[in-house]
Image 1 (cartoon, rainbow, N blue to C red):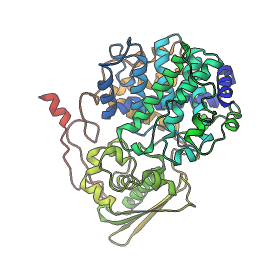
Image 2: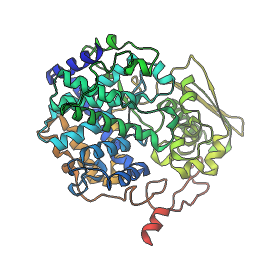
Image 3: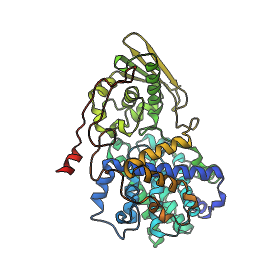
Image 4: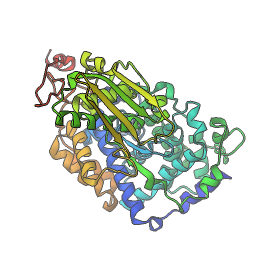
Length: 499
């Protein structure tokens, strides 16, 4: 009786059950997500979703869209969960549980924060307890059907995420075991997300809709709406419908004994995680080559040897949009060599379609090797003078063996949030979310950094690849760091505002 097993564990879970590392991992997961949700609003998808839904749906404005943190821009809880879910995932900059490739925080946190704001009076310990319950639920469930569930094309972040969100919100609402079972069942029947939609706005829609669906499942169950008490394990329930393999009872037996949140990782680059080692390899090749006095414009060919999953998940050879570029290891290697970095600015439509980037992408050859780990890669570049620069990435930064430091995570947060909030408010947002566990009322968290936004957001304007209106430079870096040429990017959204 897996559904009852999960609900019983979640209902009985207490803050006192957590070790200090578990609590720290939860807080880090939350503030990393918050930075992604704020910065992700620079993409067009969250604004489109808000403008399409808010005029037609919604109740009293009780909950915040983090990027628009201001009482006057609150919306109802389900729309807030939906939009924050989209914004937190659209840049593909969020967290990753490497054993399942699930991005666990977005669905659970988006639903939970919306309800905590609407409900009021939820302290930090209660919020973290519900959050951890939801994350553990989705990750144990994901492990129970891995890899068959993912291999047939499901997007497991959202398929498990709606169930994690239902567990978290049910915990926050204080539902009993049978009622939480009903909530889990309602979430099960809302299974959403297929890999066909990677590289489009719909990928992030999966997360927003899963957050919204899980939250609605808990609210419906609280009001007496019926489902199935065996929504997970029944013959025609979730695990048997979405996978040819399941080990859910055994995985749930480990709830509270091994904590999956301790295996959560945080991305240094805003793209598919399996291409991160190749990007880091390209960045290191560039650094070494510049040190030798070589010019990136003299590259004649690039070779990369990677784990087979890299091409399965990020094998797009000719991306045409910024979102598609996030699933192209060829693009990742090219920008690593050209820019010496991979930030959201390198995953814009303008950069992905730039002739220089395209030309270098076509010089990249990627081969797979089953002996290469998923956090490992070999990258080499051959130059006109015959010099071959090679780098081996053993454990990519952001992996379990080479995690981002607290300082790096803060830099990532401020870098994203300041695009929308400005640097001063971004610092306030960072302080708010890093101290969420100590809050007496989590519903006030957005008020701690509310105010006029520092820059325009995606509902109003389009920005250049550098994140500011106007022109941006794209160049090969030579040995003296001198730009070789400039591409002018016209900003249509800004023009529209001036008319």
